[in-house]
Image 1 (cartoon, helix red, strand yellow):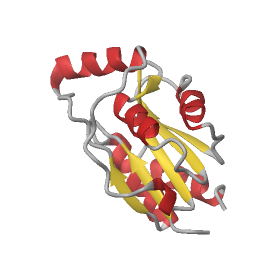
Image 2 (cartoon, helix red, strand yellow):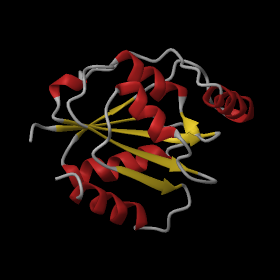
Image 3 (tube, rainbow, N blue to C red):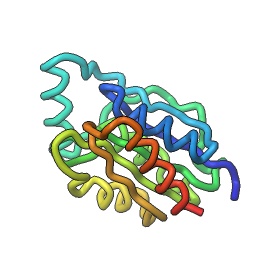
Image 4 (spheres, rainbow, N blue to C red):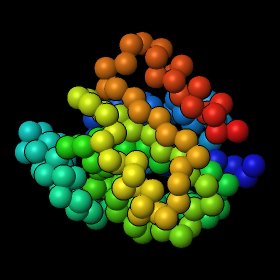
Length: 155
């Protein structure tokens, strides 16, 4: 398999920790998606949820890696209002048609992935080879254990 890439957006650091655990288990490169819209503080939190719930995208910083250069791209998002983060939606829309194989993961504070994985798949026109849902409240070591099991299912 060609080298893998783990691409993610993280507002609070939870999705970043999960991405790093998956990348470590997969021996993959990582790339963080950077939202140009301020998402910090209470206003940023509510704005993020509203934008996610209404399916909006946002302006993101240019990414350094082209998904077409990788055999597998694992895309991670926090779940906001039952949806993917607007920055992840923007990344997927900008890179549609550039993915050979995808897998998705999410971190959710109060629930499940909702319809995020379905929307991500629909945006790309690709079904993921695997998906992983993580809670923001995982016990120590649990994220790493689930990441390893997820990666084993990718091969």
